[in-house]
Amino acid sequence: MSSQLSIPIALSLIAFFIADIENQVMFKVFQRSLRFRSRVQIEKRLSKLGRTDVRDYENFRISQLAYTSIGLTILSLFLFSNRISWTTYCFLLVLIPIGVFTASERDLKNRCEKRVKDIESEFPSAIEMLTLAVGAGESPASALKRISTRANGLLANELKRVIVEIENGRTLTAALDDVSMRLSSDAIRRFVDSLAISISRGSSLVETLSHSASEVRNQERIRLLTAAGKSEISMMIPVVFLILPVSILFALYPSLANLDLFGGS
Image 1 (cartoon, one colour):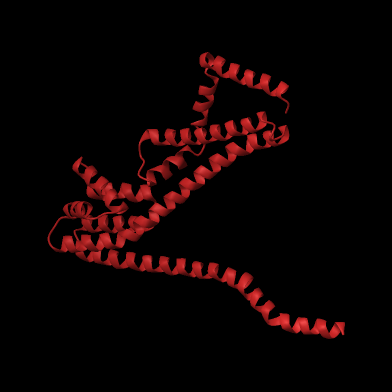
Image 2 (cartoon, rainbow, N blue to C red):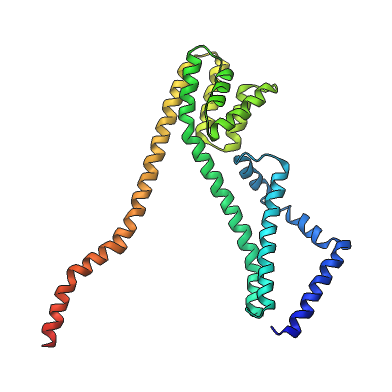
């Protein structure tokens, strides 16, 4: 694009943003961007990361719009400096926002899955400590409070929030039920259900906690074996497609060279 055309376009964009101060067109677009269909899903994923504030969703969308604005600004600079054509500019003008929003939401999903897996890996040790504390005569709430103050990690932070809710007047089972619903963890959900049934029926908490600890340990063992099996399959890919062909090539090369030598003679 020539400078004779780029300068009027730049001036028109500047005039648009100046006029937008009164009409607030960009502000309306921003407000509309905060009301996507996936808002509930995004809020659930943010809650899995421990970000339950109402403004966390808006901050997430603001970061998406900020990265999109930066990308479009750089793209416009490339256009004005004649480094890209109008066709490329129009193509990237659509591709950059889609890529930014898709990549950020995928990254949020991966972070949620990783955090839930880390919490589930810490969960068996927490249940064993809870079993020992309850067996020593402590109540479940005081035992959880002791674990949350002595332990470190993501699960300890979740237990601290449970203790705060209990101190605010909620029951133990209701506070733990909120954690299981927010994290969408089957292991924590089964533990909370068994604990609630044991408390309601008056059965032995030590036996219930011991059974839950062994069950969670078995589930963690199965998960590790499944991950090891997938890793083993992924490790076979370079062996089959890289090392094995090279080995066959080294083994057959002398014979092929001799055949070419005899064929040439």
